[in-house]
Image 1 (cartoon, rainbow, N blue to C red):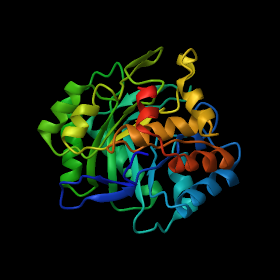
Image 2: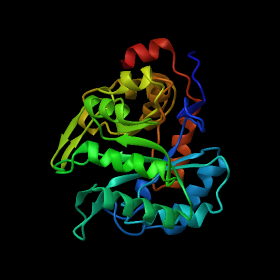
Image 3: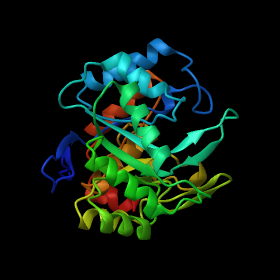
Length: 294
């Protein structure tokens, strides 16, 4: 069996590194239909957050445009006051219109407004980790948005700065401007490279993972369980049968084995599915399994 680390360091080379367990939880699915509005089952949403922390998960991914503001308010309701080791990561750079569409919200003033909103709804004085999310069709220069992010870090509003949905070139640019703690890009066994959608591009993890590994930067994969586009690839199903596991569990296990710099954050609105996903950490894939899944 392969030996995989159970923890990962965020901003490992900084004066204030954050050590977290390597399975996090993404809160996006706790919202209503279309990632908008209140959850269909609010008590269960709160139970999932409490179960996550009770199980040892100490990395939560959220955004003030989930809901809007729904996941932040759920986190505060379920978990405040927070455990000292809990890392809450949020994203800025986007907002929602009343028709539920997603638009860029990334001018310096808009980013400051988003940060202040996150601080208020999460009931904190400083956000430990913030990803600047690159949105398609934005007219705001990437460098100008990043300047605003680092300025807020200097002001003490943000502890660590990360980026999301970036190309290798954007990541390199951001790294030349300041310390980048994490990258959050789309990545999973069934979707490794840039995916073009009707709403724009979701940049992939395979394009940036080498940069992350070379610079000790955790890559946080979103949409990691996407494999609907690859139904002809039955390799995950084969390994799932071998271990009497679900395909979702094997997807998560593959990420944990793929690189020690990957921090999966599978999300769900079902407590049963949450518990099922968590058991993926008990699956020990062999080198032969990983070669088969390559």
